[in-house]
Length: 171
View 1: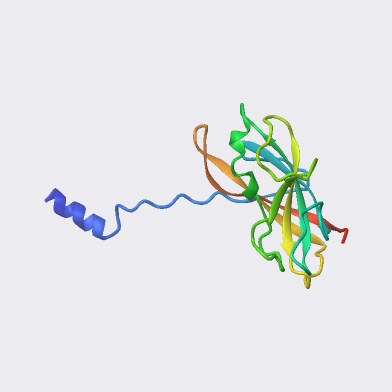
View 2 (view 1 turned 180 degrees about the horizontal axis):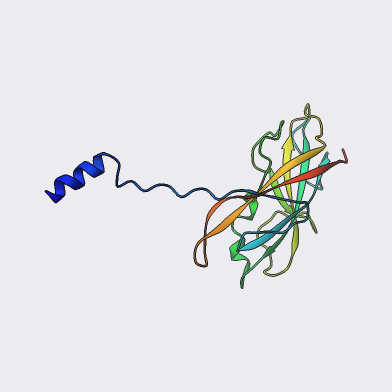
Protein backbone atom coordinates (compact mmCIF):
# COMPACT_ATOMS: atom_id res chain seq x y z
CA UNK A 1 0.00 0.00 0.00
CA UNK A 2 2.85 2.40 0.87
CA UNK A 3 4.62 1.52 -2.38
CA UNK A 4 1.48 2.21 -4.37
CA UNK A 5 1.11 5.63 -2.72
CA UNK A 6 4.75 6.47 -3.43
CA UNK A 7 4.33 5.39 -7.06
CA UNK A 8 1.31 7.69 -7.47
CA UNK A 9 3.13 10.62 -5.86
CA UNK A 10 6.17 10.02 -8.05
CA UNK A 11 4.06 9.83 -11.23
CA UNK A 12 2.37 13.09 -10.32
CA UNK A 13 5.77 14.76 -9.99
CA UNK A 14 5.57 15.12 -6.22
CA UNK A 15 9.11 13.87 -5.61
CA UNK A 16 10.81 16.23 -8.04
CA UNK A 17 13.23 18.69 -6.56
CA UNK A 18 12.60 22.29 -7.44
CA UNK A 19 15.75 23.77 -8.93
CA UNK A 20 17.39 26.42 -6.78
CA UNK A 21 16.72 29.92 -7.97
CA UNK A 22 19.67 31.42 -9.79
CA UNK A 23 21.36 34.15 -7.82
CA UNK A 24 20.79 37.59 -9.24
CA UNK A 25 23.51 39.29 -11.22
CA UNK A 26 24.34 42.62 -9.59
CA UNK A 27 25.31 45.88 -11.21
CA UNK A 28 28.77 47.21 -10.35
CA UNK A 29 30.45 50.48 -11.23
CA UNK A 30 33.79 50.81 -13.00
CA UNK A 31 36.58 49.89 -10.51
CA UNK A 32 34.15 48.27 -8.03
CA UNK A 33 35.49 44.99 -6.65
CA UNK A 34 33.50 41.87 -7.51
CA UNK A 35 34.17 39.02 -5.08
CA UNK A 36 34.34 35.52 -6.50
CA UNK A 37 35.77 33.92 -3.36
CA UNK A 38 38.79 32.47 -5.13
CA UNK A 39 39.66 35.85 -6.59
CA UNK A 40 38.44 39.44 -6.78
CA UNK A 41 37.98 41.35 -10.01
CA UNK A 42 37.43 45.01 -10.85
CA UNK A 43 36.73 46.18 -14.41
CA UNK A 44 38.79 49.34 -14.87
CA UNK A 45 38.58 50.33 -18.56
CA UNK A 46 37.69 49.43 -22.14
CA UNK A 47 39.54 50.62 -25.24
CA UNK A 48 39.06 50.05 -28.98
CA UNK A 49 42.44 49.44 -30.67
CA UNK A 50 43.79 48.15 -33.97
CA UNK A 51 46.37 45.86 -32.33
CA UNK A 52 48.11 45.30 -29.01
CA UNK A 53 51.74 44.23 -29.33
CA UNK A 54 51.78 40.88 -31.15
CA UNK A 55 48.00 40.44 -30.93
CA UNK A 56 46.67 41.31 -34.37
CA UNK A 57 43.04 40.68 -35.32
CA UNK A 58 41.91 39.16 -38.60
CA UNK A 59 42.12 41.54 -41.59
CA UNK A 60 39.53 44.29 -41.33
CA UNK A 61 38.71 43.58 -37.67
CA UNK A 62 39.72 45.52 -34.55
CA UNK A 63 40.18 44.68 -30.88
CA UNK A 64 38.14 45.71 -27.89
CA UNK A 65 40.40 45.55 -24.84
CA UNK A 66 38.70 45.18 -21.47
CA UNK A 67 41.07 45.60 -18.51
CA UNK A 68 40.25 43.85 -15.25
CA UNK A 69 42.33 44.12 -12.08
CA UNK A 70 42.40 40.62 -10.56
CA UNK A 71 43.72 39.43 -7.23
CA UNK A 72 43.95 35.68 -6.62
CA UNK A 73 43.45 34.47 -3.07
CA UNK A 74 45.00 31.38 -1.56
CA UNK A 75 48.47 29.94 -1.18
CA UNK A 76 49.14 29.46 -4.90
CA UNK A 77 47.95 30.58 -8.32
CA UNK A 78 46.14 27.29 -8.86
CA UNK A 79 42.85 28.95 -7.97
CA UNK A 80 43.19 31.00 -11.15
CA UNK A 81 42.15 28.17 -13.48
CA UNK A 82 39.04 29.93 -14.81
CA UNK A 83 40.36 33.47 -15.11
CA UNK A 84 40.36 33.28 -18.90
CA UNK A 85 36.57 33.05 -18.91
CA UNK A 86 35.45 35.61 -16.34
CA UNK A 87 34.82 38.43 -18.86
CA UNK A 88 32.16 38.45 -21.55
CA UNK A 89 30.30 41.11 -23.52
CA UNK A 90 26.70 39.86 -23.72
CA UNK A 91 24.73 41.36 -26.59
CA UNK A 92 27.71 43.29 -27.98
CA UNK A 93 27.25 43.61 -31.75
CA UNK A 94 30.06 42.62 -34.10
CA UNK A 95 32.01 40.18 -31.93
CA UNK A 96 33.66 37.49 -34.07
CA UNK A 97 33.35 35.07 -31.10
CA UNK A 98 31.57 35.28 -27.72
CA UNK A 99 34.80 34.72 -25.77
CA UNK A 100 37.94 36.87 -25.85
CA UNK A 101 40.38 35.89 -28.58
CA UNK A 102 43.30 36.45 -26.19
CA UNK A 103 43.69 37.01 -22.45
CA UNK A 104 47.00 38.72 -21.64
CA UNK A 105 48.84 40.31 -18.75
CA UNK A 106 48.93 44.05 -19.20
CA UNK A 107 52.44 44.50 -17.74
CA UNK A 108 54.24 42.49 -20.43
CA UNK A 109 51.55 41.37 -22.92
CA UNK A 110 52.23 37.69 -22.22
CA UNK A 111 49.28 35.31 -22.42
CA UNK A 112 47.64 34.54 -19.09
CA UNK A 113 48.92 31.29 -17.61
CA UNK A 114 48.74 31.95 -13.88
CA UNK A 115 48.78 34.80 -11.42
CA UNK A 116 50.75 35.24 -8.22
CA UNK A 117 48.58 34.90 -5.11
CA UNK A 118 47.65 38.07 -3.23
CA UNK A 119 49.28 40.29 -5.86
CA UNK A 120 46.83 42.41 -7.92
CA UNK A 121 47.42 42.11 -11.66
CA UNK A 122 45.84 43.93 -14.59
CA UNK A 123 44.61 41.47 -17.21
CA UNK A 124 43.44 42.44 -20.70
CA UNK A 125 40.60 40.53 -22.30
CA UNK A 126 40.96 41.09 -26.06
CA UNK A 127 37.72 40.66 -27.99
CA UNK A 128 37.87 40.69 -31.76
CA UNK A 129 35.23 42.88 -33.44
CA UNK A 130 34.19 42.87 -37.09
CA UNK A 131 35.62 45.87 -38.96
CA UNK A 132 32.18 47.09 -40.09
CA UNK A 133 31.05 47.54 -36.49
CA UNK A 134 31.34 51.08 -35.11
CA UNK A 135 33.11 51.63 -31.80
CA UNK A 136 30.42 51.77 -29.11
CA UNK A 137 30.28 54.60 -26.58
CA UNK A 138 30.08 52.00 -23.81
CA UNK A 139 30.01 48.24 -23.34
CA UNK A 140 28.42 46.00 -20.76
CA UNK A 141 31.06 43.70 -19.28
CA UNK A 142 29.72 40.64 -17.54
CA UNK A 143 32.01 39.36 -14.79
CA UNK A 144 31.57 35.67 -14.02
CA UNK A 145 32.94 33.62 -11.17
CA UNK A 146 31.98 31.38 -8.29
CA UNK A 147 29.34 31.79 -5.60
CA UNK A 148 29.33 30.20 -2.21
CA UNK A 149 26.74 27.45 -2.00
CA UNK A 150 27.45 25.48 1.17
CA UNK A 151 29.41 27.05 3.95
CA UNK A 152 32.80 27.99 2.57
CA UNK A 153 32.57 25.82 -0.54
CA UNK A 154 32.68 27.79 -3.79
CA UNK A 155 30.86 26.39 -6.79
CA UNK A 156 28.29 27.30 -9.43
CA UNK A 157 30.43 29.27 -11.89
CA UNK A 158 28.29 31.90 -13.59
CA UNK A 159 27.51 35.61 -13.93
CA UNK A 160 28.19 37.70 -10.82
CA UNK A 161 27.98 41.31 -11.99
CA UNK A 162 27.53 43.55 -14.98
CA UNK A 163 29.57 46.71 -15.39
CA UNK A 164 28.80 49.49 -17.87
CA UNK A 165 32.17 50.76 -19.09
CA UNK A 166 32.85 53.76 -21.35
CA UNK A 167 34.94 52.83 -24.40
CA UNK A 168 37.94 54.94 -25.40
CA UNK A 169 38.53 54.89 -29.14
CA UNK A 170 42.29 54.53 -29.80
CA UNK A 171 41.99 53.05 -33.28
